[in-house]
Image (cartoon, helix red, strand yellow):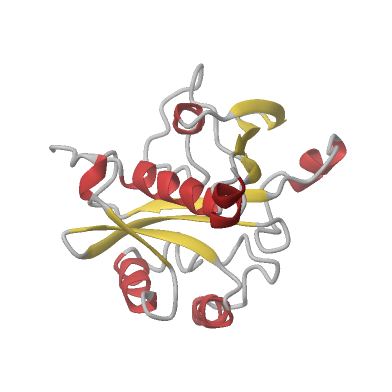
Length: 203
């Protein structure tokens, strides 16, 4: 399958206006991992049912308590990158190990990344992550953390989807290892420069 150039993807934030596009993608992929609706990283976490997860996610979108970039190809939403400050992306994998050596919280976290099952390995997540980092810069920048999985030295992950992304992807965007929090999971960090209008006026 031919990979579309990253420039062919259009990115938009998840808002009440783009909710229907996001919902269509989630529903086309069995609610994502059986019905999580990308709610697991939010402070309220998973609800008792997939319908509850959907309602909780929709409430965050309506209340403006979510940062998420949607990637589109030919007008169809095909993936996303969730990000936000720690209070918003509050629940992460391997939390006890993370907190054990925690020195200071980042300004931003990358939560989950996702690509439609028909559009994987085609640069969808790469385009969404690039747009998310750009949005962080526009919002004032700062230290950004991600929690990807190491693939180097690891056996094939057939049938698995790395919902926090592969380490190699974040290396492409200048993230460096900070510390290991599981056998195959790392905290990775980079600083995004302040690109807000106020910063540009001050230069």
